[in-house]
Image 1: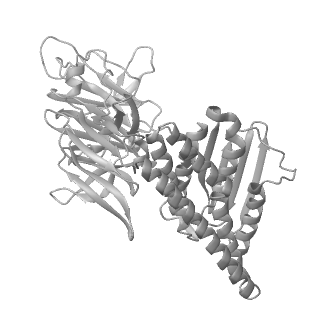
Image 2 (image 1 turned 120 degrees about the vertical axis):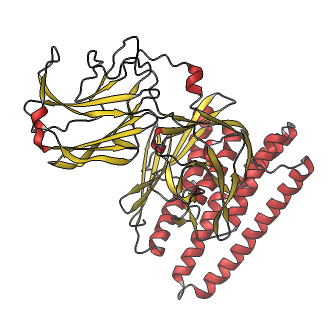
Length: 538
């Protein structure tokens, strides 16, 4: 099969270094091993060539600020079918040559020293100052592979942030709040309802050139990087779509200052003769400070005791009422409404697995210990997460979204971290829409609680829990793994966790007859992995 030529990794830049700008000079070459050659003003200093981008395949960007003219030649091996190649040339996006053939009569042999002799033809000499020259090349045998070379003679514009948008949950779905025309510093507060931050940039003809990073100014570490600009939903003054990047709220781990940096993805040191300084590079960079506040509920010492007592009383009352209603309903309609009874048992088991007497005792004991130590801030955080968790459980919803499940697991694990100090991660497939995929409520909680109770108590700070939401074709795979001491899966245990897990999966298979729930438990001395597959769920 014929090899494709003109890829951006196969670029040749030819420069000359005479004392004055005498136009195009074809004597000195700066070889990068390839098929296109560019010739520039003999006095040229800074030429940044062969820049490539992950979001623009088969594109090479060449920054030629201050250059007056360029000449472009194309090279071929003698074995290549020159008549199969076509090229198009654009000046400021206007065509000056369209699908032209290579003039084979003008091909000349070129001896490049140790390399094989090639044939070359001139594509032309062009004025480049304050202009953009674009050359598109392809082989008619593979017309889908079009290679684009951009010669940019204008100053690269500095990116401007036009808007910040914060997405938050509402009763009817989601909504947005905007900060338009932000200054050098912007203050943003994230509440429990907020889940996403959007950065909107001004539109340009080289949006693909810019990439965005976010630095935690407290640790001086980069916490986010992306060049994946999207379009849609945000219009500029001329009603054209503006590029934007979405950022999950979870990257902001704590309140403080964060720096947004938007800069061109240029290899400034590509050419050894470049004399650009760090100060000059800074002129191309956009910097903006975000003052982030993570909103948390705060309680006084008296409020902590009062709220703890109220929560305990409320939970106990709810348990008694639910238990009474459940027994009465099951006794009256056991035969004719077996499925409904199963659902009630499933809901009860979900609540009991989360808020059993042992869990409640430990939670309240943990709050009391923190208060007695006068660690009011830690007690506030503990109770805030405990209260949010109990409120979610008491809603008693049959199904919740993956996003809500993740939020509940975050609250529970962060609360237990205060006691045991283990580490955890919750990851998911990028193509999963967490907000719009629903699962039975508290589905993973029994397994997570079991991992904490039996895996993390011995490990403490060395403990790790890994949770994943994975898409496999039409199946949804949920996993909970820990690095605890493991257990014998064949042995019968008196603990509630595993018994509850088996019965819960059985009940789910009765309720969701069109979808099978498959539970696999693997355990060794190095840890335990729970895998729950929801077949044909997506």
